[in-house]
Length: 195
Length: 195
DNA sequence: ACACCTTATGCACAAAGGTGCATATGCGTC
DNA sequence: GACGCATATGCACCTTTGTGCATAAGGTGT
Figure (cartoon, each protein chain N blue to C red):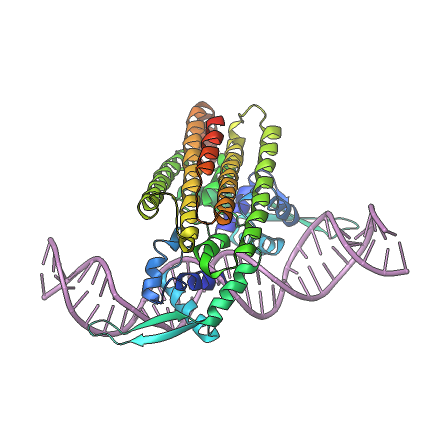
């Protein structure tokens, strides 16, 4: 039921169409919650069935008609009710960590390349969050309604920075253990009759 | 297909029963990948059907017989193949961030209480990882096969620290209204200078 | 005596999430 | 003129994850 609540959370800002929501899930809230348009349209139908949102059709020419969804009082209440329950901490669930866990059984060069790509990705993310922060909240303060967005961006920065630093550390440790890993690779090559 | 690979990753260490795997998923690998015993048993059946693991029954008295699962060469190859693909960065998907996003629509006192509980949780996690690190890798180095586990714990520490600091910042900003917080930034600088 | 925890496995059903495909049109570009 | 892109919505299928329940024996606590 979390995606539904994320959609309701988006609609507290302003009424939106499914298409606009999908774009929002590609930028602001999507930084920490991914969902494609199919998921969103499906969830919107459910929310409408429950009476948590109301759809209003807007006739357009040239483009297909659009459905603008508005949060109903029931939807707002449902969101509030959901938000009052204690949240459960999410686990990281990152493929990379599974590979690290089974380091002896994977190809180290591919893993290193992967970490390098990730390093770049997380650096991009970090500077992106920092840019948005600097632009939207140049003095580090926010009106109360936007405070959560500011804090989310701050968490984004902290998180990406932590991962960036870790990637750097990991690359260093994986290359300084090169002699060891050659031995491992020779052993593996022998086992598989390959490379 | 990720849970299956996480199980294969576990079995690179040693053969295990479903029960042992469930316990492992409650501790070491479970720090970043949650799975309960039902999921694990189900996934083990699939892996057995695919020939990635082999089950051997061990007759016991007093307790139900157990099935010890061993990684097959095919399973090891499948894991290696999976690990060679580029990983995709996971998104955070934390309920708390959705609530923060819709700050104006939620009960602030409940949210604050929630963040306080989370703060405690992440502090616990952090010190737990630090304790394990100090115990298993007292000199900060590891034999190659265990390097990944060391690095995973390090990421755990970095991650939890980032979240802990963020929770503190969030609590401060939520109680003081909208006013920030040279205090926070000074605290940050001090902490980072210390590291 | 009774409740509860640990060991050990698993089914059935429901909810949530992901992938591919389908439709319809206008606008810019190669 | 063909091609992709933005707008705008949605179905069908499949995988993954979560919840509740069932079985079975021995040990530990109150």
